[in-house]
Length: 316
Image (cartoon, rainbow, N blue to C red; front, top):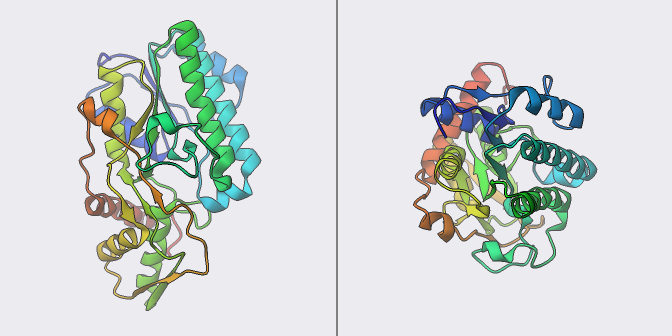
């Protein structure tokens, strides 16, 4: 990419999209195209067609999508599969018609089978049944990734896809019922500290382990691939390290300065015991994550406090 190349970041207000915009600006890219949902509804095929025809982007980062935690995934199943599938299809197809040079699509680790070898390799995709709670979202992401692969094979496009692990960082969503695990724990433990509670109850045993990737590291990996590589479809991205939910909660507790007890209510289910992706392929290309968990949590918590001060979140 050239510094004056036209680059469209779909979903620029979200956690991944905003990290991409920050990085692109820092690196000196001057022609970054963004649109709010009010200005461009990616569900509207005609509107997306007109946007690509008038803006003619050379590079596309497809970071837009409907996301949420377990509650959202189990409650809004139709919304998750419809909205994600339609947005992806519109952007990928119009990128082909507009002869976009490169596109990078973001999938999700939920596309892996519920029962899968650990660490999960790219070759394991479609090797078994999906986790039922987020199956609609996973199917949509699989469709987007396979669309990239199909267009590359049939039309010779250069559409790549990344499979990120659990992402966290600034501008994440802190809604009570729709947030992911890191923002959910930050909000709950912060509330306990501010209200003087002696205990925070978390569901499950705290034993399941996950990989947690700081969003700015994901942005750096995305730009690295867009600048240096092509034709890469379905590439794992993560730190390659596992942390139990108890270790994650302990780190957040330390950063926030909460001195009470973390209580695990094991009457609630844990979910999959281990979920770690094999990152050897992207590591072999010369990229690896740089932000350790505590440093990433500190930056995320600072952003949370800033949002509170600015009145963008309810007090506690």
